[in-house]
Length: 486
Image (cartoon, rainbow, N blue to C red; front, side):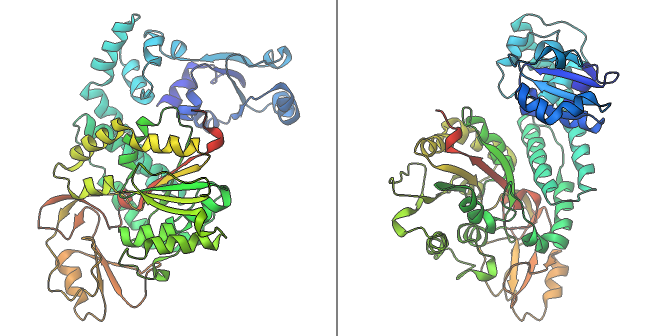
């Protein structure tokens, strides 16, 4: 919506060379350039005259469609300017009936939602107070929010039908979280279950292939996190937020103003339990390689062994818990485990609304942001991620007396060995037979379909351990010490 709106408001429909002055940094916030690219434009972020002439003079002189994006104050020589149509992209140019200063005061303003409301309204709100009323009464009106969420959901659902690369699920998970958060905040019922089902179908077929994928921008599986950190940082701390989903991060990141970070994602292990996925994250191993995959007693030892593999000495390695940690100047490789969110998940009685409220309290306390700032100030690159996410599930009934071989502490998966009546469990609970990707092969694994868990029948619970998008795709945040100036 916003990208299309910017495209329509410029002369891009009849001009082939544009000089866009991005006054309010919209490109950084929204990536609206993707719409111009879809219409055949080459999009160039202008840095300086010399670099432009070296790399893009031919583009400017050709018949290709070209957008040069600059910021106010950038020096652009006259000969370049005269070959382009100059366009200002700002709050004032896009929303002339609203007060620009009033809009800028809202740091987390949803531009998609703003655009939807603005285009359907024909009144003027020039004064700051009038604009505030517009935002509160028009932009966030239930009808408008619902229309926006439905439009976004339909777009994301369509995206699941043409996934060509695993990274598409990172974007889908982020968008799903945004839909779920806004819907919960405004008490709007929009069911995003189909996105979880689409991911489940993908994971059942393709999850075992992810270990062969290589990316320079972020790790693929949590088992690749430590390798990625080692390859990209000389001094780093990984903060593992136990149980943090994309939904939770969508709220917590509101306290990260002033922290420069890059957001990506990573796949947790399946089953998405703490013992499996967090140990894989900290050890750099697959579940079948762990000393004790179903218990956490060896977690710290696994982390130290992994760090030693990178030739760190023991006095350069630290494994801690809680927000109040501090590291000696000798530390080069650190891990901090934070349990808050997982504890809130397992104690949750108010479903998504309860998580929203609890996450909002955590965000307002600023503990994670303050820890990140302290570590950055001490020269550490900071990586924030999770061992697994969480999701809302409906109980199928407790699995008792069934011959389950191993207690996984998950109500999402049953681990069986030489169990004669596996098919009866599948039929009774509607379980899926998981293909054993990365898991010890001597067992069989039955996993709940998305939206269900082996809890008290018909009880709604927040939990994890399964194969849904909410549980498996988790945030991976990179903040570098060199970019922090706090």
